[in-house]
Image 1 (tube, rainbow, N blue to C red):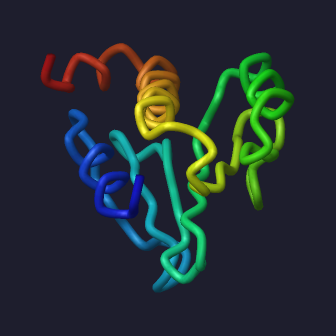
Image 2: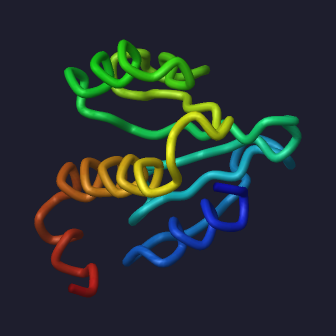
Length: 117
């Protein structure tokens, strides 16, 4: 996976916007104003931060060397993944989907109803 694939996959989801709220190099993807994915554009190796169910987050860290606790994020709910080729793109896309779905599920019902099906 590369930055273009990551970006395209995030933007293809309902209600997603991309922003640079922190600085000029931290690309953030939000659904209805809530962050579900982010990356730094100035890293040699693509690293992405994704929200994750806490138990699943621990499991992923134990089973994949490229998965670490979230950098500058809640270590309980976020993972930082180094996209170094050790995990297939299909699995990375699933992790992005999981992050998006967690954030959507946390939105108020009224806001969720505004998202296209």
